[in-house]
Structure formats: C-alpha cells, structure tokens
Length: 114
Image (cartoon, rainbow, N blue to C red; front, top):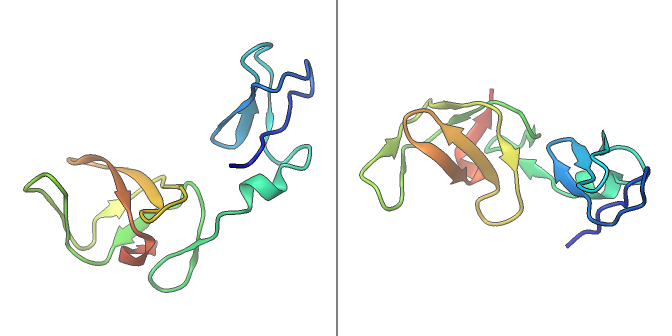
C-alpha cells in the first residue's frame, strides 16, 4: 500500500484521494495529486487495452467480446461503449458503470480504447 502525502496546510496524515485530488478531512483542504512528490503514487499503475494502447482514468473504451455478467443472466454485448473508466489494481483492472447493468469490473484484455 502506498503512503499518501500529508496535508500541506495543517500537516494531517489522514488524507485521502478523490479522483485527481488529495483531500484533508480535518481542514477540508484540497490539492492536486501531482503536487508534493505524489507522482510515484499516480503513475504506478500501467494498464493496456487488447491492442496494446495505454489506458488512463476517464477514458472511453469499447467491449470487444460478449461478456457474461457473473450472478446474472445479463450479457455485455460486443461494441458496448463504457465511458469514464477508473483503473484499479487487481485481476479485473477497470472499474466502470455500464448503462442498463450498473457498476462492474472489467479486464483490460476485453476492451479497446475508443
């Protein structure tokens, strides 16, 4: 687990990450993630799509294969566009929300960047 930077205003160590900002719950200070040597935290995750293109948070991707939804009879069809993805660590390295299905985790090997 990576260490988040302390708040530059009140020096609190209880900061958390919210998209591309760090937030201090004690003084409500918000600052950009690229400030104060946080580059190693935000750049550590490198994810590529099925074609080898680098994916970033907020990208739009398209599904390249019919995917069965575990625990449901639903299927995510080929060509389904997924907007505003979020990259996470793990086997399923994309968090997203698909219209008509809801929140899901996808493997990057089944998507291509649009």
